[in-house]
Image (cartoon, rainbow, N blue to C red; front, side, top):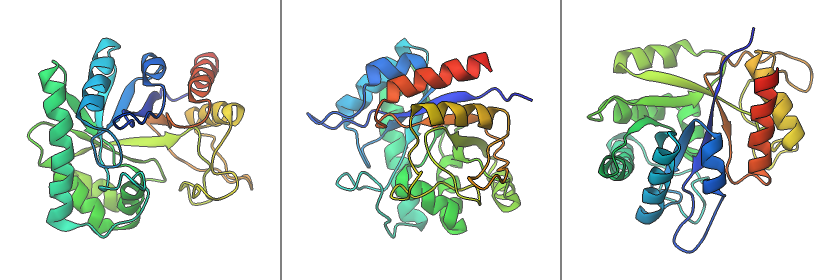
Length: 246
């Protein structure tokens, strides 16, 4: 049975004169844009341009929140939790939401980035902090989490917070036998165009397997492709074609 998957991509990750990714070429190809909010990347002008681009192509806007770590691109772990983390997330959502509203659109979901994303999956207390931050925002927002065999505690926590979860799988990243992402420095962590297209189809058919042949039941709603991946545009087009023709 084929699952209908939306495509999301990390966008707006330039900063000042430093450019990352080809957002103008990628935005028309995706359904949802995870726009950097100034934590790991992005600045007010880049956010505004990303929002305008998303609105032009009818692309859903999401806040890509992170630790405040531009030098490490948000991929370094930091000991930020509790109310301090909630404040940090509200600060970043608020920045993007304000720009979005000024340009007649809105933020509809939140996706943690990098080290914060992995901390959310590894530490139930941080997961709870993030859910508190997202659910207490003045407008209803969904939270993007990794699509793994459904953790009852996470699902129950989302119910308690009145929060909608959006489950995400990755087309361009390798998986461990537990259904988690391989660390970027491990062999097989970053997939090429052909492998990413094949993996996208496997995820859509719920047939994703480990290198040893063990099935990983991901049950995804959305599929992520990283905009800073080499050949990202060619990869996204290949994935679109593979999903449309399967």
